[in-house]
Image 1 (cartoon, one colour):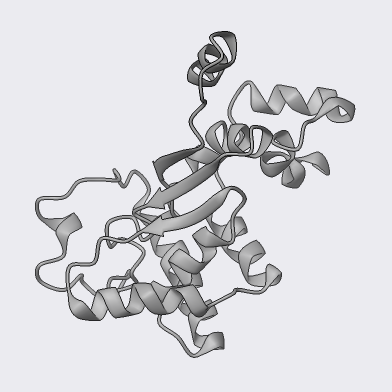
Image 2: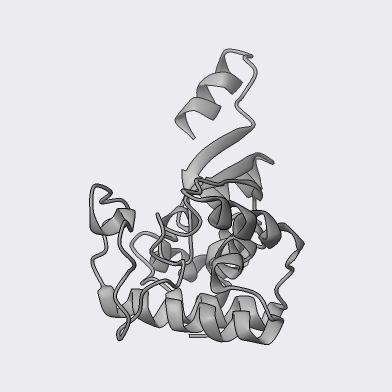
Length: 186
């Protein structure tokens, strides 16, 4: 917002996109970046939609990640602070993928692309198979019910000041409504 305000104040061209980390596990941008993008008609280019391989579903509570998995070696982003939640997300990705006859690794980027303000994805495949999976995700359009399932399992607590905004229900902007609807009925 600061950069956009400076552009407005000095009659400069505002930025029209941003590159952010966004995945079923890392949804923090929904708190501020997505609402600003929606309100200011800018686009988000999402990177790391599979959370550096964490949501690729190559691991689970009962299956160890394959040798060479980046998150288990040199790559520590995103930080996994809740392994059980990550496993819950992976299980939901697998269940949804089974319904479409695709891999779970295709569902994660398709989910991300279905979110407000996301206009494109940046993929970082390590192998040709991973790249093929990522590219095939472009043809997958998850049903609203499947988006809701992933939203529920990957939901994050509403931080301040956003829970306070619920007191102004009659004054919420379109950007606010990207984050707050699931909390309005609480």
